[in-house]
Length: 84
Image (cartoon, rainbow, N blue to C red):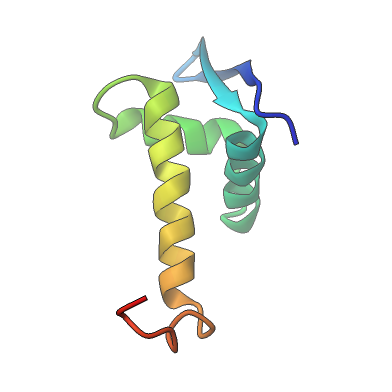
């Protein structure tokens, strides 16, 4: 998977907007949209509405929070000692 930052564009609130994301974040964002049964543009619009700062950073933080939340809910990670 490439670590290159790529420009992406979607239409939200009736206008085109663009943001830059690495492929890894883009694929995770697509996975989140799929799990939530929504279009990628809908998900980006949701993040856009609640963001502080630029959209690219907000999307990265959203993906990170989603991954952290799923890890916290995973039974595999609940048996890991806290002192590790």
